[in-house]
Image (cartoon, rainbow, N blue to C red):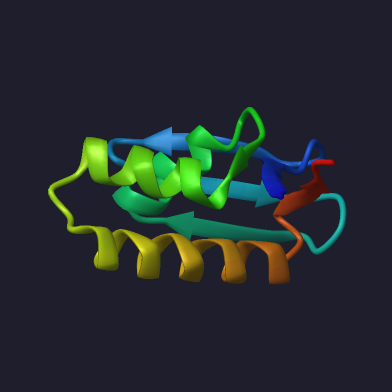
Length: 91
């Protein structure tokens, strides 16, 4: 199963309920996350798999399982495409 973890080259700053991710080494970009994405981002400080992230989201926010699955899937897709999250394969 795949786990996802924040790329170690990145730094971020939480501002209220949102966050800014600073990618100064590779792409020289700043990415802004809303409150839900910030929650998922912080959850990925330690490796988490998709199922764990969905459970955390449904436990923390008032969302149903389908919405949480969609949100987590979109979050992982976007942030892995931007090389902000590392994908690790567990055996």
